Image 1 (tube, one colour):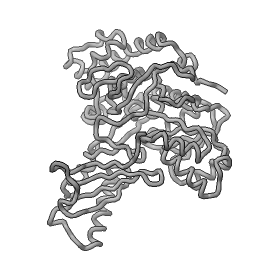
Image 2 (cartoon, rainbow, N blue to C red):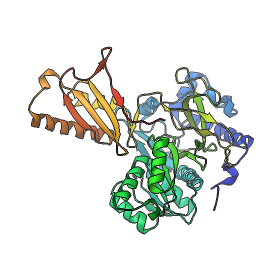
Image 3 (cartoon, rainbow, N blue to C red):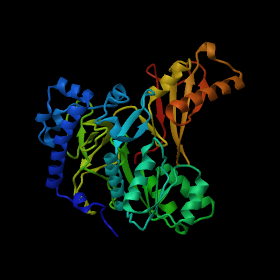
Image 4 (cartoon, rainbow, N blue to C red):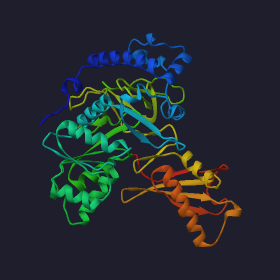
Length: 435
C-alpha cells in the first residue's frame, strides 16, 4: 500500500522545501507583476518591485489581498494569463452578491488534483480503492477536486454529487465503496440512514472518509467513525486558492499538512498584519506559488489557526495547520456554503425591508439549520397569517438566490429582535463547533 503519492516532495527536508518555495515565489512574483495590473498597482503603491523578492523571507514586503480586492477586481481583474489559456472556472458566493470567480489552466487543475491525490493516499487510498465522491459538483470545488484526485490515483471513482441518499447508499453497498468524500454533516446523515435501514457499520465496505467544507468537532468525528465503521480525515481548501487539498490530515489526525510546494502559509496578527512566529494563533494567509490563471499573493483567508512543524509520525515533513478555530470576519459556513450577514442585508433592502434581523444557526440531526428573523416596519405588519406566510416564502426564495441555500424566514413584529446596547444581535450560532 503506498504511503505517499509523491514521496520525494511529501517527505522532503525543510531546506529542500524552502529551496522549492524560494524558486517558485521569485518566479511567481514576476509573473503576477507582469500580468496582473491590479496587483502590480498594489505593489507600486507599496514601493516594492519583483527584484526585492529573493526568498520567502521577503514575502512580508508584499501587499495583502483580501476578499474586498477580489470583489473589486471581479471578474477578470486578477486573471494572470490570457483567457484562451483557461479551461475552467469555479466559484463561491461573495459577500454582497459578487461571486469569487477563480480561473484554472490545465496545469492548475493537474496540480490541484495531485494535491487531492496526496490527501487520498494519506487516508489510506490506493489504485484498488472505490472512491465515492458525494461532494457537490458544478461551480463548487469539492466534487471536482476529489474526483480528479481519485482519477490521478487510479481508483475507481463514483462521481455521485450530493443528495439522493437512497441512491448513494445503493451504490455504496452494491459497488463496495471503500472511501467516502463529502461534508461531515452529510457523512453523519448517511450513517444515520444506513442504521435506519437496518445496516450495521460492519455491513459496509468503507474504510475511510475525507470530510471538509464545513466546521466539525472531534465529537462529530468520533460519531461518524462509529456510525460508518471508518477512520475520518479532515481536508482544507478554499476556492480562491484552488479548492480542497490545500491541506489534509494524515493517519495521526492531529492537524492538516499544507502542500507547501504549492502554497506558502503565514500566520499574521489580524489587527496589525504582522507575521507571527510558529505556534502562535493568528490569521492564516496563503500565497499560490505556481498557480497560472488565478495567482493570489498573500491572500487573507480570515481563518484563525496555528501552524506547527512538530515532527509527524506519518513521515510527512510539510507544516501542519490545526482546524480553524474561528474567523477574523463575520462569515458563517452553513452546510458547506459561505454566508455573510452583508448578503442578507442586501436582500432585505432589495425586497423593501429594514436591515433589522437576526440569524440563528443550529445543528439538528447533524445538519445545519438557518433561521432568519426579520423585523417588519409598522406599515408592513399584518396579523393575517396567510399574508405573512406568502411574504416569508417570497423572501426565502430571494435569500436562496443570493446565498445558495434556503433559510427559514420569520417576519416578526417591529422591535422584537433582541438587542444589546441598542444594537440588534445579528448572529446567534448555537452549533457546538469547537471542543
